[in-house]
Length: 301
Image (tube, rainbow, N blue to C red; front, side, top):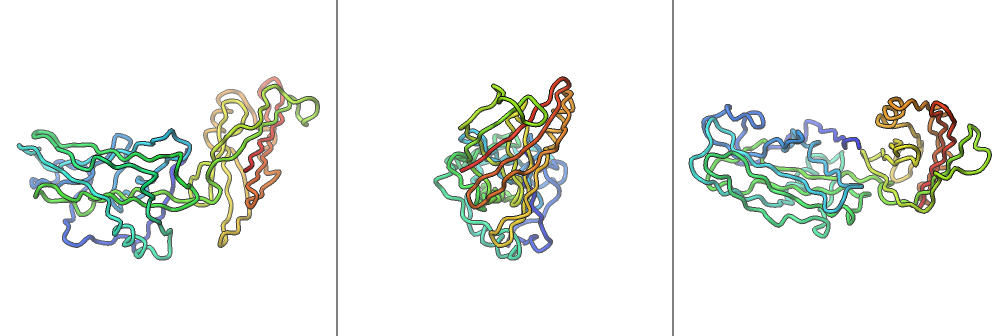
């Protein structure tokens, strides 16, 4: 699934009173004085306003709970010679500050506490070590993906050690999409180019599928054909009125088809787009090297 894209304007570079400004993430050689900060995870995610996009919570369609790591590290030439207790805390004031600084952009609601768990908020970085990992559990099956949520988690205490000003807050967030969520899914396939004849036995009905939000006006959903790669559905949103729907194969679909000798004869097209009723039909014709496949994916509430 695509990453959620956030555009950060210069006005978002708000400063946090009393905090330090320091050098790049995980630059252990950057300072002889230890600075406690959020580090870069193994997947390349960073934090702070500079790493805001990396803090998108991509829980839609994932098993529940969906686990997000928060790695705290000590940036210094040498690790400490004694254990260091670190405390993290949710600070909703940071959400309101963010909204105020970004008044013309996406506005975030409080992340409902019934949809996540952050039980262990204190850890210890052992002497001679640099890192400790905390985990936030998101209950992906309980989240309302049509809303914008933010869960800012800061490094609240580092036992007297300096705390980074740039990288001391994880702005965990989700951008809502009005089409995101669960749909019923029927898949029709005919083994002809024009849809004539009997349905293929590969057809199915009454399945459940999730429209996965890429951003506020883009969702992805699978086709029932082949390995079920995703379509990408885009639209305009004018004050809650959705229009100008368009569908295209995802990059993963195009690559999967190309790698397996499948040619798209008739590109994905929209037969029906009714956002009020929550009903969408997508049509496509492919050629697998020996036979045509006439396909309709029907998604509805």
